[in-house]
Image 1 (cartoon, rainbow, N blue to C red):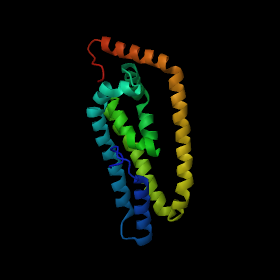
Image 2: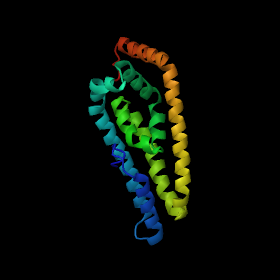
Image 3: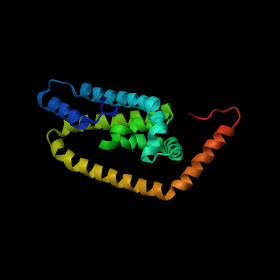
Image 4: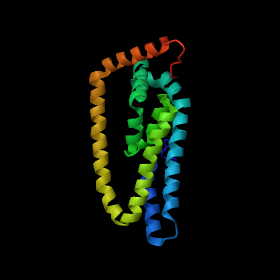
Length: 196
């Protein structure tokens, strides 16, 4: 839960260790360990989302220009989270560094909460439940597998992040213009409120 709120803690290691303890001692029931991990992951992300929504965007508006986050780039971030936020939240659950910050970013970019909740829950169930049950059924083999698999996932995540940064750099002007046009269109639609 704390990792999902934005505090960098070793949640994967904790879930795997608890599952291995269940498998070797049978003093804990794996169903309760997996359920606790899933509930903690989902609750933590929702708390992180709220923190990002209440504190993140105002802070980025005031101080973001110092690190290159201009008003136009902030608007682009909101546009991208509105369009692709579900994929970002779901995939972010499986990438260690992104897992810590994805909920804060979703909240700061005002991603719609129902959409966030759906993709966060799907990611939390697959990530926490998957790790718990895999570690339980694979036993000690999971510790040997998790290193190479974790490195492969981190490498793929890093490559995807670099590709996304390159894509955004090359298409920033076009995407920003599209974001501004969409925001203007939403503001001019009678009877409908633009999403905050």
